[in-house]
Image 1: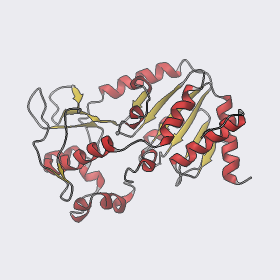
Image 2: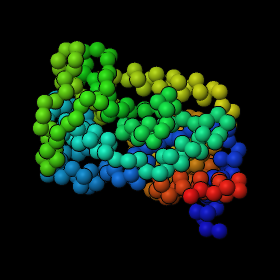
Image 3: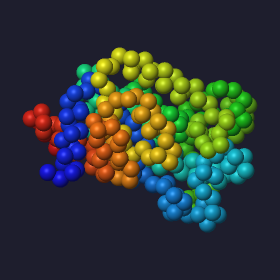
Image 4: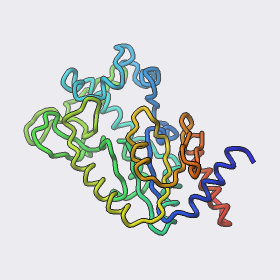
Amino acid sequence: MTALADGYAAAARLIEQADALVICAGAGMGVDSGLPDFRGPGGFWQAYPALGRARIRFEEIASPAAFRRDPEVAWGFYGHRLNLYRATVPHEGFGLLRELAASMPRGGVVFTSNVDGHFQRAGFGEDRVTECHGSIHHLQCLEPCSDAIWSAADLVPEVDVAECRIRLAMPRCPNCGALARPAILMFGDRDWIEGRTREQERRLADWLRTVERPLVIEVGAGSTVATVRAFVHSLDAPLIRINPREPEVVQRRDVGLGVGAREGISGIVRSSAGGKGGSVA
């Protein structure tokens, strides 16, 4: 057997022993859906050439300061992302994880730093998803004037993609009329309204107390912004890590797979089904 086949077989054994699944996902989960990889300035500027020409890094545009400095460009960036996430279909790995979670006695939950809402798009219930950095599908006041957040469902941004600049009127706070922004934890952000995420975290903690043998599948979560990995380590549970760049694991019981999200998820699900005498198309 190859090292990868050995890894899939070991992952199948961990799945067999678990009574619940904790799916922990970072930005690498969405790459196989066609979403851009912002790893390093080169990848970011390739996705947003106008920001590349201005030498504006991801950390600079993804900040409350950008909305105050140049709101049309900031909303050009986030408006484009909102449109992109709405138009992108989550890859098959999302559905395979949902089915795997449903097959376990205590089901499964998601903890993700992704703001795209793709786990919900793929059929995971709202009460099963924790979005630790917030959601682009919700808005808040830039100031902020209150702790309110509201749905972005009625916002349809018209963006000049070549210039990364919003064309139409920018969203406003319904309470005070100030500029609105996505309810996302940004860089250098002291004003993020985190109430929705804190409620998700409370539900997650309640659920974790009901399980005895959780298994963590971590997908596409790196060490640069280590929020997801820190949560994974706090669980002290068996781990399957799927990451083409950083697959290393510490515990001997754990499994590291150096492949992309869709390939890794498909491989462990096929291996698990094969061990039970079934098959996955």
